[in-house]
Length: 316
Image (cartoon, rainbow, N blue to C red; front, side):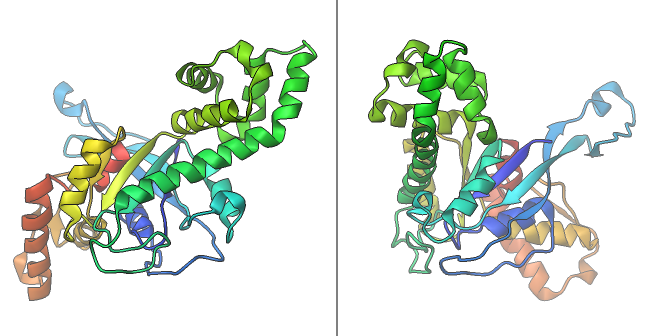
């Protein structure tokens, strides 16, 4: 089963996204610089169009569920603790966090698109922090983590190649298998870095670092989840990120998705994750506060962005 890793600095909504995807009973709170951590692990669901309606049949899938013509297929999701600058050097328990990332096939990078948390996740006034800095910080941390692993093992890699018994690609692939780096990742990374297999024996540090950066991006593809889109200046920041980044950027409101899924679970509304609307089953069972909350979600999130962004993030 594929493993999706949720990453980001503290207090941006990583655990909210995890709960929105899995409905697991987890504690959601604002934490300062994290010193101890056990990751939350659960099952989320990727949605695809089911062929049951097209074929005019009623299906009974074993490893997925079909709701109104949409099939939901389970994937494992891990909520990785808040990374802060210097994690790759072991700051805090950064090495432990990075070890959890090692197992992931895809990364969902949750950011506070409203800019209401500083570089280390401390709460500040919205708009006082540039979320672009968080994208750059995570990429640098992961790139330097890959580089340090390569650098630490580089002499062994070169010696094995020099012995003439193994192909360079095979040596690198074996050395990096724990990071889920495959042969095709290495070939693509070499090509994008402007290097060849023959260059491996004579690479300098800047070549290795360039290769590490490409390997990180190729083997751990990233989706940016622009959470807190409902808080100004979130929408403006999202548009700027979407324009500048060569990455998928999804506008998102995790708390809205949690509210809708909990309401559906309790039989108050009918809601299919990823839909642009919901249906109230019995308005008499809703409190006035619940009604206000549903109206707010409809007007400020669903009508504006087409969905909460949670399902789109995991589907991407």
